[in-house]
Image (cartoon, rainbow, N blue to C red):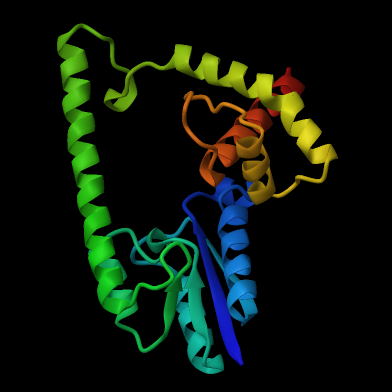
Length: 221
């Protein structure tokens, strides 16, 4: 028999309470286990962890050793925030499977982590350069150097409200999981906030979170 321990991580307590992010990770892991004959023994959830303090990840490693199970994560970044941390974790004498790249071994996981870190560095540099260029053109910047985005927020809120009836209709048809909502929106050709793009778990989760925030704000008035 193939046994597995699922490890899921979200960065904030707010995400942990809402389930956003966790649901997508858990769905991906459960589907992988079902398709590949793994018996999922436990689902370990870490909320608001730091690089030096991940007690739930250590617990997951210990349980894998105890039950001779494989550690399964939805994405590579759940194992660590940088290549050094990920490399340290994959060196353990425990089998690890990353669902979005299931054929990766210890060596390729290390390489993928290095590539992802370089991509994040490049994005950070490009963002800083774009903000500096905007500042030189006289565009007002907000707190921490971010461009003021009230207009974008209002447009995104309006877009979310526009799609609310569509989501309600999907729910009535039984499309209640993130996976099913993504598939239905793409099948029906429903446009995303950025025309031409496809729906993904992240965009659907962001949409649902925006609707939830708007609903809470309206109830508070």
